Amino acid sequence: MGRTIAIANQKGGVGKTTTSINLSASLAEKGKKVLVIDTDPQGNTTSGFGVEKNDLENTIYELILGECSINECIINDVVPGVSVIPSNVNLAAAEIELIGVDKKEYILKNEVDWVKDKFDFIIIDCPPSLNVLTINSLTTADSVLVPIQCEYYALEGLSQLIHTVNLVKERLNPNLDMEGVVFTMYDSRTNLSMQVVENVKNHFKQNVFHTLIPRNIRLAEAPSYGMPISMYDARSAGAEAYKLLADEVINRKEA
Image 1 (tube, rainbow, N blue to C red):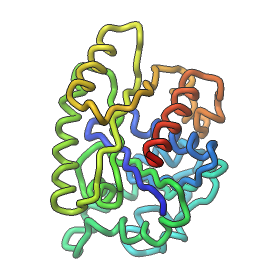
Image 2 (cartoon, rainbow, N blue to C red):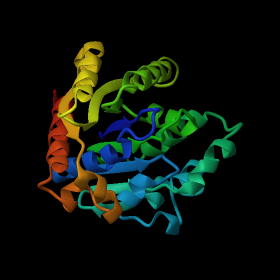
Image 3 (cartoon, rainbow, N blue to C red):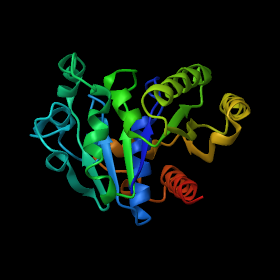
Image 4 (cartoon, helix red, strand yellow):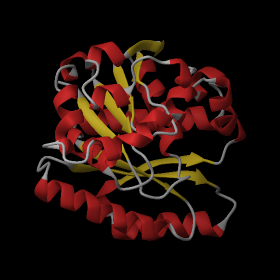
C-alpha cells in the first residue's frame, strides 16, 4: 500500500514544488515507485518534469470533473520510477465547477484509492492557498510535509497550516499525520536562517527533518530544463540534500 504525502504550506514561494519534484526523483533513485500529483493550477511540478502542460488531453482537472479515469491521466515514467498526474491553468476553474457537488472533499481520494497499491509513495504538490484542491489533497494524504523558507515570517505561515491540518484531521481525515517540517533556502552564513531553524525546532520538537535544503543556484536552474536536480547536476549541494531527505522519509516510513 503506497504512502501518500501532501507537500503543503499556505504561503507561496517556500519550495513546495522544488521539494515535490526533487524528493520524488530522489525516492525513485532509491528504487521506490513514485506517483506525483500536481494540484496547483500553475502546473510548475508538471513542467518541472519536462511535461508540456498546455498540450495535454487529460489532467487532474478532467479527473476531478469525472471526465477521465485516473489511469487515463497518469503520465508514466516522466523520469525513471516517477509517474505524474499533470495540471495546467484549467484547474483554476475547478473551485467553481465543484460548487454544489456532493462530498467534493473526497473526489481525489476516491480516485487515488484505485492506484494506491501500485506505488510506494504518492507525493501531492498542493497549491499555496486553502481551497477545495488543498482540502482534497489533505483528505487523500496519510501525512503532511511542510517546506518552510528560512525567513522571518516562517512561523506565522506554519501555525496557520497546523490549524488547517488539525481541522481536516478532526472533520474529514482522522488518519492524517504531520510528516514533518523541512527547511528550504537555508543559508548557513546568515544568523536569520539559524534563528528560524531554532525557533521552529523549539515549537515542533518531534516533527523536524534533520536535512536542511540549501540556497543553491543549480537547484533554481533545474526546472527551466525540465529536470529534477538529480539529473541536472547530481553532484550539487541541492541534489545531495534531497537524497538525504529521501533517506529520512523512507526511514520514517519503516520506523
